[in-house]
Image (cartoon, rainbow, N blue to C red; front, side):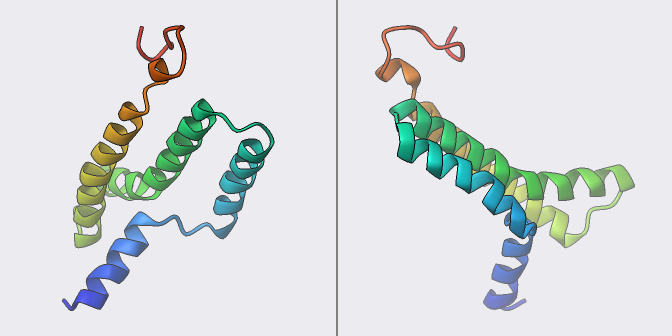
Length: 109
């Protein structure tokens, strides 16, 4: 498989295909950050983006597992989820709310 084919396969697995979904996600986030941006707002926007990007590969993995098959596309989706979600979680964890607020957050209690 050529490098271009692998990249196309990863993009089809990793990026959501719903063109309207990007708008439903990004418009409220950008507007909220422009109107009343805060450090926690950026963390929330990052978490929403991570969840949005995890939706497509997770959907592929769950559908194929329920059908009892494991084609190459599913393997790519599993690898993407394993690698990227751990990186996203680590990056969001570094942006701990306790750095900005003297109050403990519900996530750290």
